[in-house]
Image (tube, rainbow, N blue to C red; front, side, top):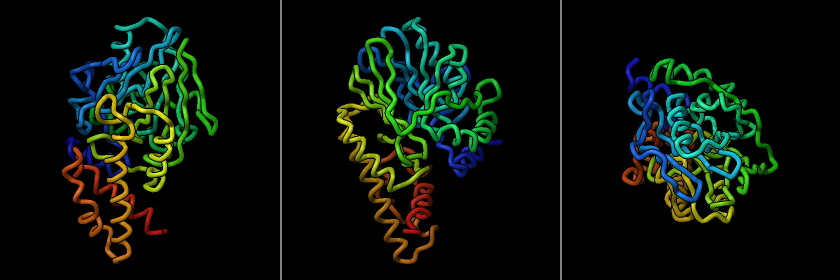
Length: 311
């Protein structure tokens, strides 16, 4: 299957194509950067999935405590996860006890298989297991077509679901807090706060510079942004964009885009426009503000239209 066909197929199926690494190399040349003491992040490139980047396009990394290591999103493929594990081992031999999977999209979860020999607990939103059961096999087939069997990676469900109550992990002198969010970017978004550095890890609830991908609820995402602001965190590691950002400043453009998407979709519905007409007109003034806008915006309008037509 040609790459263009694969990419369109994945997008139509609701796959956030934020990563696909060629076996053995990272999606970004910069590698892991220490963005705070003991916190390392690989800034994913603003690219779509390809055989050249092996689905390694999300921001991924690790947090190192006195006793243990936590992986914060394991990567977009087995190859991406293997690269990440190698980079972690260059920095510490402390045991990798936790792998946190922020949500179901392949660029954030298909590297989990690279860490199975470490026997970590795999943490995810309490709805992540169901989402992987519904989508995982299809995602895996599409990634295998794009990357090959050796690089794609297995579907690995969480071993420790994070429910309504906040989950707290202790890495040794460093506490990590995990919170499950209501449906927003997806239906299984998990947010993490590292108390040691004060860094918030909202994953794909925060896109910076790269077109967001709506796979959950538009109104829910706007509510989630309010909750992120209320977290008290000053800096954050977005799912896509720079390795770290000022949280409130970074939320602004995303909130603007989502609000315009909501308002103009409502106007299109009130005017009796078809979905196709809405796709051609809604929020198009935002095009110059976002990388990959034309790859994702039409689908965002489609999702918004379906959600808002029943208000």
